[in-house]
Amino acid sequence: MGLNNIREKKSHEIRIIVAAAGIAVFFAILFTVVTGRSQNFDDSVRFFFYDMRSEWLTWAAKIITYMGNWHSIVILCIILLIIKPLRMTYGVPVSLGAVFVTLMNKIIKTAVQRPRPDEIFRLIDEGGFSFSSGHSITSMFVFGMLIYLVRNNVKKGMTANILTVILFIPTIFIGLSRIYLGVHYPTDVLAGWCLGIAVIMFAIEIIERITGKNKKI
Image 1: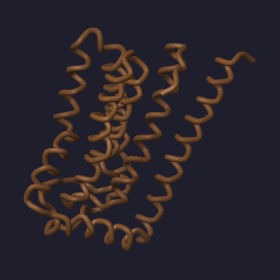
Image 2 (image 1 turned 135 degrees about the vertical axis):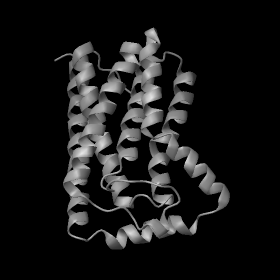
Image 3 (image 1 turned 90 degrees about the vertical axis):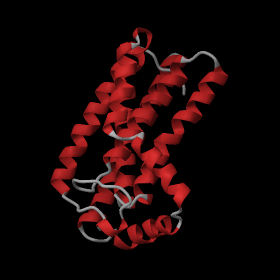
Image 4 (image 1 turned 30 degrees about the vertical axis):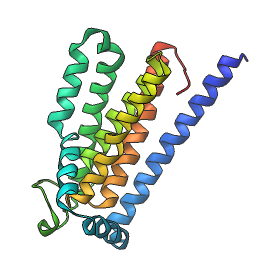
């Protein structure tokens, strides 16, 4: 077996392990939620964030959370699809994945039907159910996927590193902003991140099978 085949097999195995771990942790979190075992953890974490609230942090959290709104994600996907050089490499995989995780999360929300935190704790208006966080799963997939694509397609190392840092910020902080703003429990966010990571792994697997590429991030 050639060196490239060995690397390809190892990368494939790592992706499967990460995807399986993400799904396993998601179901573990789901179990704690539906059985009421997550309350102590959720309360300790979310009240830690509530205690941090200040005027400027609230302003920043609102801006960050709006980056994960469906309007922002749709605009980003449209831009990636309109710009021809970016369409197939970035636009198509990111857009298709964003649609998939959005539909999947709607099904999960409908099935679990977890109420959001009490309105007294919310700093913005938000409807619908709480588990899992749509902002968290979508931002994890969209921006995490963009990090993978950037690191595999941008030839200049410095540019790739700068873009990675820029994209990493919304990947994590959109989810944290949902806790801070009082519209999600921490377990909602963690569950969204786990599913987002799992879908990224499957998406990478599909992309590399189609393109025949297997580059290291």
